[in-house]
Length: 146
Image (tube, rainbow, N blue to C red; front, side, top):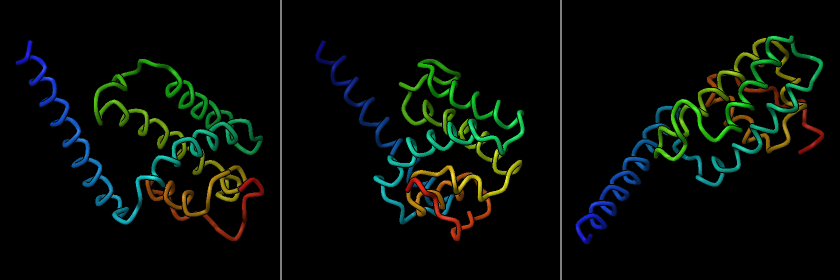
C-alpha cells in the first residue's frame, strides 16, 4: 500500500512538472513569456463569452456561427477526444477547438465586430489574438461592455 501511494505521488509530481514545462515552452513559443498565469486563467471565461456573443451576432455567416456553437458545445461536455482529467493534454484539445472557431469567425467578419463583442480587457483580447495567430485587433473601437 505504501509503495502504491509513493508511486502515485511521484506520478502526480512528474505530471505537474511536465505541465509547468509545457506551459513555459508554449508561452515562449507564442511570444507570451511575460504573460501572468492570472491573465491566462481569466482569458478562458472571457473567450467563451466572446464565442457566445459572436454566435448570437447577426454579423457572421451561418457557417461561422455553427463553428462557434460547436466549440461551445465541445467545451461544455465533460468527455471529449482527450478527457480533461489528463494533465496538459486534456485541455489542449479544448483550446484548439476554441482557437479554430475564433479564427474562422474573425476571418469571416470584421475585427471590429469581435472587439464590440469582447467583454474582457483590451490586453486580454490582444493576447487572445496572438494565441490564435491573428493580426492584432483594432483597439480604436472600444467594447461597451468592458
